[in-house]
Image (cartoon, rainbow, N blue to C red; front, side):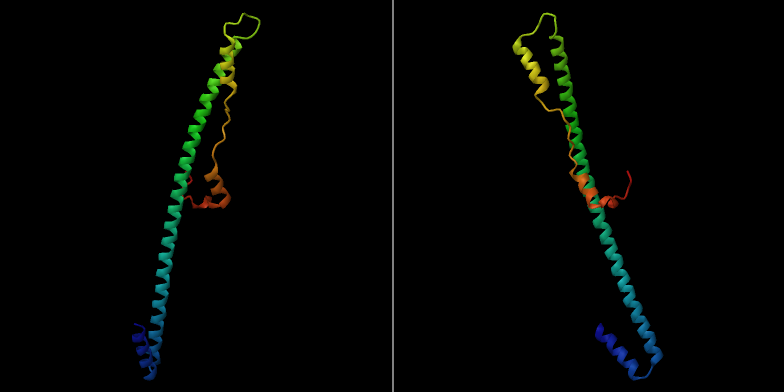
Length: 143
């Protein structure tokens, strides 16, 4: 192909047909520009595809992280309710009234209400990564 264009160019120059050579040169420039524009468009499509894939991966990771955090929060709430119930039972069996509970049962209630940690620490790895890396802009929808 290049050989063909070279022969045409040399033919026009040797015959002193400057106007035809100019038209040929402009045509060749236009072809090069069109080729560059097509290559840029393909590159833009590819970059957009990569961004969409990256966005989908982050959205799936966020969904998993939020699901895990929700389940962990439910577990902590349930444990807090159990601790609350055990604490109420302990309070009912303390004070000036006669004790209606054995020392062993009291120890089990005390252990059951104070031995488990009821603190909620959500996982924030994916959110922190998105914020710290500045990738908030990859999300196409505000929802």
